Length: 122
Image (cartoon, rainbow, N blue to C red; front, side):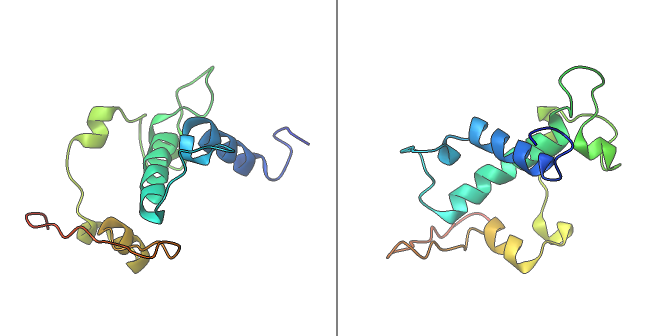
């Protein structure tokens, strides 16, 4: 079944939206993400847009997934997203997500994983 009665409906729609909106996840593309770090950063941006900014239904009310869960009171705008910098120390991220935030994730398939050491940032 390809309708909302399918238990995997939400997963299938999410997969379809990722493939539709991100060039790196289309079939037979040259735009694939070469590093795990880049791929997760693109998907993190997509996740925020999908949950906090995009309405659940294109027609009807303006409810987002975050609003349904009670995490947000209204759909976010770009200015809401960029109004302040969030520090991961205050967000209590797991060790795995801290590694992504600090850009310490390596791609095993690459022989050389050069890390860009920031001089003036945190």
